Image 1 (cartoon, rainbow, N blue to C red):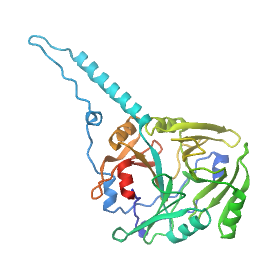
Image 2 (tube, rainbow, N blue to C red; image 1 turned 30 degrees about the vertical axis):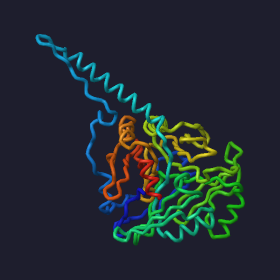
Image 3 (cartoon, rainbow, N blue to C red; image 1 turned 90 degrees about the vertical axis):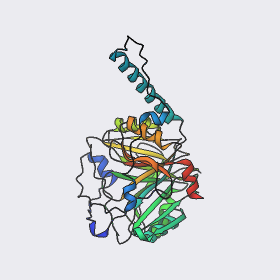
Length: 367
């Protein structure tokens, strides 16, 4: 599966500044993060930046309009220009309509941890996840572990990456938290405390609502929001990211990613607004929670959180839609050498990375 980039331990410069979610929301002030370390990419890193552009017509099967010229007559340049412009508009409309029909699903979220066995133990014993698979790539000095609440072909899971010799990362101020739906928040919190886990917000109703929540931290400092909810097919239900312009982010994820704006809530008392976006209802699928803190347009992303992987029926059309939506392609669509899985990678307007993976290729990889 798509992996994140290994880092050399000698290149890490850590920052200890990790403000709480509450402090960020209340202050609304911009946070100053430590300088990020540089990555020491392996040969696979280059795969995310290789590939040549494919002409737009090849994505949609559109042929350039041919101008017929009779002897002694000519077609005016203005008319030709109008025909070409009309063709481009039709192409854009076609691809944006296709996005809405594409069979998309959030596959997994990828991030780095300093002690893989310690994190696996915490997630399985305290959060009730299952270790689905684990793979070691010694020649590139990293190990991956996939954990979740069900099989990867039907559930959203976490992909943990341990880079040899690197035991700490800077989470930064941009990443928010993961959300897990549980039937009894207080019971889970008691278990986490008994195992020596850190609880940063005791169980209780969310401010201005009735849903019982709590916040905890895993051994690497990643925050998890526990939400009290009845049985659900997708317990790993949220990824919260902070953005500098909420309306711009909503427009991008609707147009380029084909997500639906499920709800939007402003909290002027605490100076923040959230938007829930996804491919299905909150109680049955994973959602992206975008948070805008009043007056904050930029955040420090650190070097811990990596990306979200999303399944698609066509990585080529997906890449074109991302360009039309204002995103930046960082890996042109095409198969990965050696394994032939087709992917494309991109950055949203806030610099958050996502990787789109061909649905059929993804299922083949799991076989």
